[in-house]
Image (cartoon, rainbow, N blue to C red; front, side):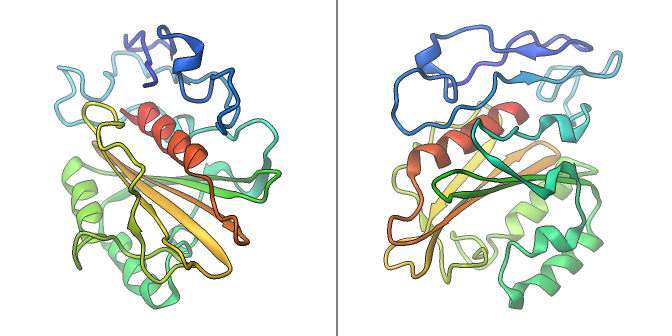
Amino acid sequence: MLVLGGLGAGTAAGITSMKRTDVPGLATRDDGRWDYPALSLPALPADAPRPYSDSNTAEVHHADLRRLLLPAPAGATVDKKLDGGWVDIARYAAEYGKDDRAALTQRLKDSALRHLTARGWTMPDGTSSRVYLLQFNSVAYSTEFHDRLFEDGSLPLAPTGTDEPAFDEDWASDAGAEFTTVRAYSEAEPYGAEQVRHGYVLAGDTLALVVQSRKGKAGTEAVPFHQTLILQDQLLG
């Protein structure tokens, strides 16, 4: 599991332990993982605590949300419209089916959403990735929005390109950080023209959505999807 150390306020925290081959994104063996840059937590405003510290019982992320967004891996072509800056609700809602977008948009407008940022890229094999971070005014609001994505049962609202998501059977339930909630889903065969994988990270006042898709019979690969989800989880947790 990724380890982010140096948690003092006002300092940038980097990876401080574990062998390179044990850290997702820094492995030297070719097992399908993407080559992400070395990750570090961004510096905080003076006297601002990190989430989940004893002095931050509200679990607020005080760092600039854009700095907590996972960077694109080596070899990626970055989406110029999802370049790590702020995006609007309509762009996030477009990740879901047309019949769900109006209600989802209204739900976010009615919620205490503070910030919304996103990054997207495409790998040489055609895999498209989009990562969104939604920050709310409190844990109560982020949790309510997250839970309502699952209000029709244990499976979440289906992303565009798939009729019904299924549980990702290869995802290890203990792969997430200590204080976060991570859920992973994979479109089961037959999946038509493309396969979609997606997952959520609920981390205090912030919710992350990670989506990967690839056209063709080969579908998406589990390893880079899990790697991407774990790294984004660690940046938030």
